[in-house]
Each structure stands twice: as C-alpha cells, then as structure tokens.
Length: 416
Ligand SMILES: [Zn+2]
Image (cartoon, rainbow, N blue to C red; front, side, top):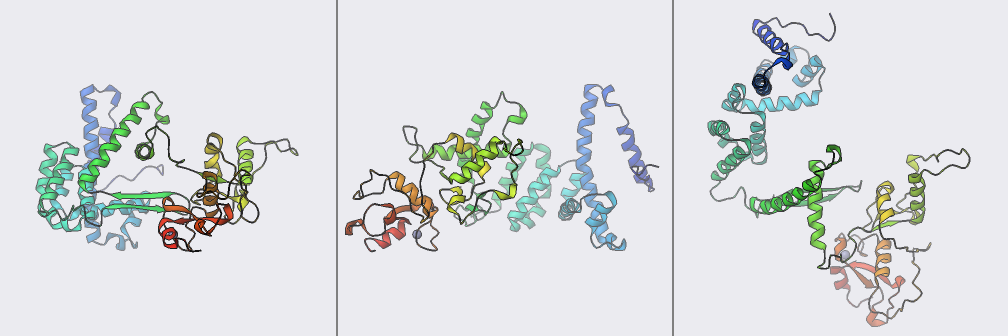
C-alpha cells in the first residue's frame, strides 16, 4: 500500500460516503453533455460548501467529547493538522468558524442543506465582529437570513442584511457619522511604508466609492488590450485610482502642480552606487560584473553622503529611487561638511523671502521637520523662518533660515 493512500473508513456511513465520492470522481468528465457537466460543476461546488457545514458539526461534537485530549493532544487544530499533514493555523481558523456557526443552528442547518454559502455566513460573522451588540438579534433573525439567501443574489442579500441591521437601530446610533470609529488613520512604518486604514459611514463611503469606482473603470478600460499578467491587481487598481484622484486634487487649472508631489533627496555617493549597481559595471580586476554586497548599500541616516530619503526625511530604498532618478527633474544642492549649503552667487541677501532653491535646501537639511525639537506637525505646515528676524536686519541667507511649522512660526513672531 502506498503511503499516499488513506485507509478506507470503517463506519458504514463514511464508507458509503467515500464510495459515492469515488463514483463521482470516476466519471470521465470529457464524456459528459454540456448540461451534465454543468450539473457536476454546480453539485461539486455546492457539496464543497455543505461539507464545511458538516465539518463544523463534527468539530463541535469533537470539542464536546474532548477528542483531542483523549488523543493526548492539547488542541484540536494541532490534532487534525497532525493527522492530515495540514497547517494547524489554517485549521485553527476553520475551527473558529465551526465554533461560531454552532451558535446559529438554523444557519448551520441551511449550510448543510446547501441553502446558504460560507460567504453568506462570513458576511454575518464580520457584521457581528464589528457590532457585537447585533449578536442576539442575529440569533433571532436566522430564518430571515436563510429566506433572503434563497430569494436574492449575493450582493442584494448583503444589502437586505444591511437594511435589517439599520432597522434594529432606530436612532441611527450604530452608523452615526459622528461616531469616533469613523475616520482615517495614516501610519508611517519604519520601513517607509504608509498604512492607511479608513472607515466611513454610509454616505461618506458612497461618495468615496462612486469616485474610486469611476476611476477604476477608466484604468480597466485603458488596460483592455494588456495581457492578464500585465494588468494591475484589484488592490493595485484601487490604490492607483485613489492616487489619481488625490493628485488631480492638487493640480492647478493650467495642469501644473504647485510643487512636485514627491521630492527625493539623494546624495551623489548613493546615486553613483545605485547607477553602478543598476548598470552592472564591469569590475576592472575580474572583467566580470561588479560584485555588490546587498548589506553594504552606502546609505546611512547619520551621514550626509549616505542620504536617500524623501524631502520629509523618510528613508527610501535606492533601488526604488532608480526610476525617479532617471526620469525626474534634478536639482543639485551642494551641502558642505558643516551641514551648510552653498549659496547661489547671484542671491541678494536682502530679499524678504527665501527662494525656491533655498527652501529646498533648508527642507532637505531639516529633513522635513519643524525646527522646534519634538514638534510633530505635518510637513505641509512648514514655513521658512528667519532665525534672526528679517524685520531686525536678518538676512535671507541659508545660515539664517530654518523651517518651522506655522503655529511655531507664528508663536515666535519677530523674536530671535
Ligand atoms: Zn512646530
């Protein structure tokens, strides 16, 4: 006997089940009429869903009888995973579903009968997760969920559950747009990734979705002739759509932007290293490509020559800056070892305001932070401050400038 074969089940019901399964599996599908094939397709899909209901039932009994313990295993998921060579984490999440389902006997029966799918139940499970107070109401509404699933296609079913949910909430408290649960949290991770978590009330969400879906549609249309693997994934498409909407919001009427949306600061040393890597320079000693150690990128937070970051001081991996380096507008800022930038020769220090180049240098030096220690105000609030006030004769030269956020700049006023 091959190790890949499983022992035949001994219980007559299971033996019959296995026999039926093997009989279906033994049918040569290519001999089927189209209608028959369709029947196989739908039955196999339905059976797959029903089996999950059956599994939940067995799991619950196994929990009741402390089956894992009796097999000397502390958890049922590890016990199952061990027997089927499965992933215990995955099994654990399936068991969590089984435990949840047990609380809703009518839904459970409907899954086994093939009247609802796992997707329906996952939707309800999520709803309960986000609104634990809905729990007791859900137990009473099981019949409604099942009936609606029989009558409606899935998206309409979701809407009908939404109606049911709102009806439970006469004063609108659960979906109150003023509820603090609504809003957007933007987190910058040390890796430089930006995590955006948004939760919107129904009406705000509608406005958001309509705009994003329109934009996604345009992207999809533009991708029509591309091969499947060249198209954006759904996640990427949504993100691209949101970015296009945001960028358009910044655009001036003539189609230009008030300033570049992305400004990268890269030292000459990093840029040269990057180009050498990207172009695979020939090593004069070996005549082969240069051997680069991936752990020895010449980037370093503390080293002016090791900078590769956004104007806000967020580190950027040089490889990710390669395309911008090749296609974007470059401005050379010369900064000496005293962290001072070299002034343009024609600059007149009596000018009231710092010019664009000076602003860029000062922002690059300040790494996009307000000059007041510990201030965390956003980059967009930064203004150029004359350290020695202009009104008292302070010159508009780089050593006399530093960015302060608007509140700190205002608070400082004309003081030194
Ligand atoms: Zn500040």
